[in-house]
Length: 360
Ligand code: IPM
Ligand code: MG
Image (cartoon, rainbow, N blue to C red; front, side, top):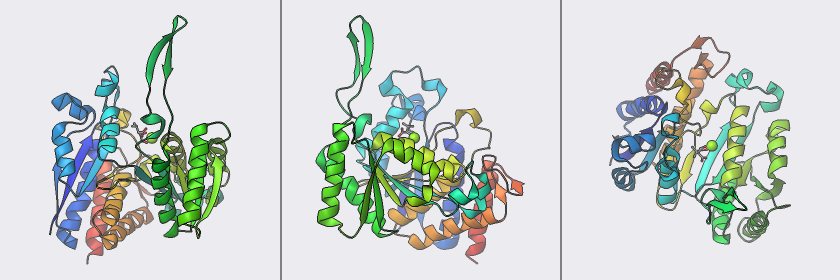
């Protein structure tokens, strides 16, 4: 039986990186019998340009009818003047919320081959293997009330950061379950010394651990300290679980341990749907120049194979092909070192060739 993937390239470098990921999928079809088919639809600025909606109805329908969604990136200066609900980011937040993708897995793994590419000392980052589990459909990103008001003759902007117990329970369960498949340690990140929402977060995480995951080690860290510890001694972390905003920030920080944000894939998973996307943005400054690093998107395909398509063996093959290409010294521009600098499509070709060769 075939599988169907909704492919949403989006804006900026989104189209280029997704093209390379599809190249890899093509090899999985032809050389590994994957039997996947895909259909493209618009999201973000592309959605606005083609149908006046950053999350068009046709895209929603396609996503609902597919086994998984693969997304490139959204956003760009062109759409910044638009009203907030029409902006590309509203499309991304819209699809996350509409598909109920509450659990965002962002693994930050340092490849030995890229040790020199990190801005941190090799001895600090060697062996780092962190999974950031970010809550994705609540918190201050979605809290009500929000907006602008007039106070004492000046404008005031405001947002609401809130979590219900049930929202914390389900993301905590996700993190504990993920930890059981790794080193069995979870660090929950909050700001419980200041925020009520964090107090509830912490109490709820502790309750879930005690009642359902007594075997998993749980620690807590304030977000400011966590940001500092990630740079000071990142190897202390296994799974980090945190809310939407803190997770957004800490996952970008964690990505730089690996040498480039261009390396980090992600999976966003809910009860019924799942979406896979690189954690980086649309990089308008290099869009259309065939310079971007497609590895985060290719590694997102690996996550899709593992979590949505039940093909852990093929996921491992894709990951091995990426490692083999890095072993060969092949690098995109964002990755320092190496012996051969290639374009975005050059990197996609290199991974595809490896994968084909590995099939024998
Ligand atoms: C991310 C991005 C998005 C976010 C933006 C583009 C809305 O930074 O996926 O981390 O803030 O979630
Ligand atoms: Mg971000």
